[in-house]
Image (cartoon, rainbow, N blue to C red; front, side):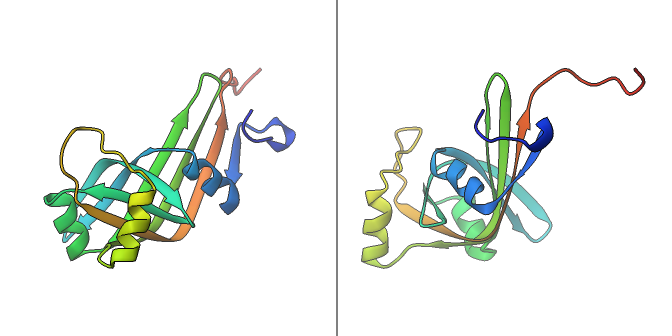
Length: 144
C-alpha cells in the first residue's frame, strides 16, 4: 500500500508532502483552463520539480487560453489493482521566457507524447495542492 490509512479507512486525505511525492513520480495529467465562460480540460505530459509543474506545448488553444487567463487547475491520478489516488493543484501558469528558465525546463526531459514540435515551456506555480488516496474493497451494505 502506498500510504497507511488510519483505522483502515477507505479514503485518506493526503498532506502536501504526500501530494508532491505522487506528482513527482507521475508524468501524465490534465490541465484545466478557463476563458470567459468556456472551460477546457486537456491532457499533458509533465514533470513536477521544486513544487512547480512544468509542461511543453505548441501554439494553439492551450497556449492562447493560459495567456489570457493564467489561473489553472491541474489534476493527476493513478489507478492500481487495489488502490488509487488523485491530486488537484491550483495555481498560475506562465510561459517561460528567460534563457536560464528554459534551460532548466529542458533539463527535465519532458518528452512529447507525439512527434510534434512543442517549443514553449510552461511553468505552473502551485498555490494549493490537495489529494486523496483510496483503498479498493467490497461495497459495504448499509443494513447488515
